[in-house]
Length: 108
Image (cartoon, rainbow, N blue to C red; front, side, top):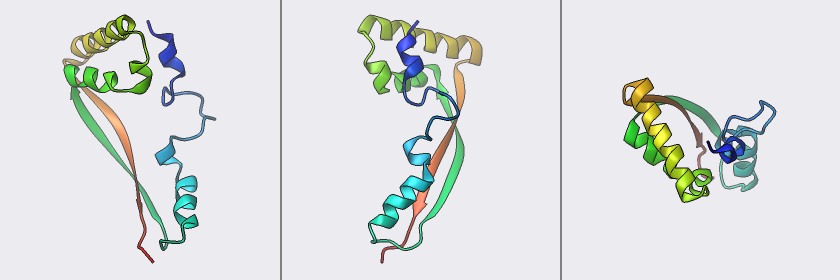
């Protein structure tokens, strides 16, 4: 339906792809350390589950840049399909796993 979305960042490419920006702890900690404004950086990943109604899921996907770049008609068709799938296959509520990367460091 929208092959352009398959190559979008975060679309689940090969395992060799670099991690998403916030989850690349090595790079983020190096950036914080290079500022010399903070002490030891502590990093934690918080896993959680979001629950989205079919309409909320549609609105969320409609806000993603790769989806916004689709021609209007194509975007509407794909968003209709997402909403219909959420309603028909998941009873109108989709649970989606998330990871939140937290970085804490004291100021010097």
